[in-house]
Image (cartoon, rainbow, N blue to C red):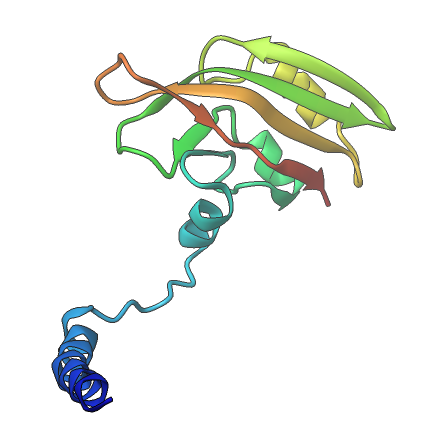
Length: 146
């Protein structure tokens, strides 16, 4: 019994300073509230940006002034090389595909014809990393016209 108590005391004396020092060696992490950090934590990795937004509400003016989709949340210099645009107008969905980061004339026309409450989404989006060899999947979210 004496040996068990003595071993327990030695163990406590050994672990107490070690746990105290371990608390100081771990840097404090401050939570980030930026939109990009929120997106990355929810989706992890690359995401589609259109008109400076990752989904959500978008105005007709914002739609009309943009003709390119971009990628964020991965290596700087990455570029989209294919995507599918799903446009839902009056409850009917139409899908259009493209092999670049620019919207086609038909895509622009479809987006300009949307009314309040209609929506669109970039899907099956892929991007090249800056080395132009590696490919990443790019997440997209639904845009709703307001």
